[in-house]
Image (cartoon, rainbow, N blue to C red):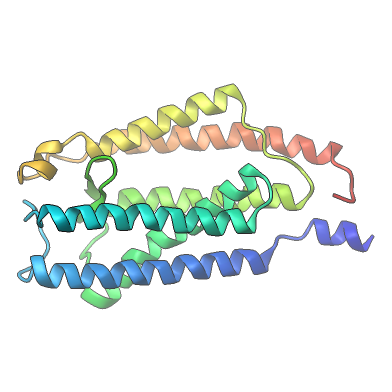
Length: 229
């Protein structure tokens, strides 16, 4: 009975420490942005962008890759199976992304609104968009990650279907395209074209559909899972 009770509990300690890791990573990134903006945008960060030197861009690309590897490493240490690890990765990533903007607001009083534009990522091409776009995705990642963690903690398994993979790929492509389609604004210092909110919304809906299809199937594994797992 004790083993069964423990198996059905949400691992609050793991979720807390993974979330704390995301919070502190958000501060580290926000602190770095404070320095970069003081150097390259002393009059304020705004489009059209002033592009730093090629060396600084290369360093930034390396830093972003290292940040993702850090998140993957922590997730791999926390989870046991692939999708459980992926769930912890989504949780850490989501908290990191949201707290990055919270720290920027605290340190620089930026952004002035959730619709203000930002450079989101540089790999493989620069991503740009309003702050609300990555924040909405981060919220979905946190919710989905915690729900998947709950499935594994209760002894079940997360099993995406072919249909969920298709929905997930469609959603990912649409969201990434909404961030990277305007290369003139990122590579040629032009003012960005209006953001394609419809692509974000459809992409988020497809991603949620992919998750729900997999999650409902995964909940069925709980009924067949032995109580001692």
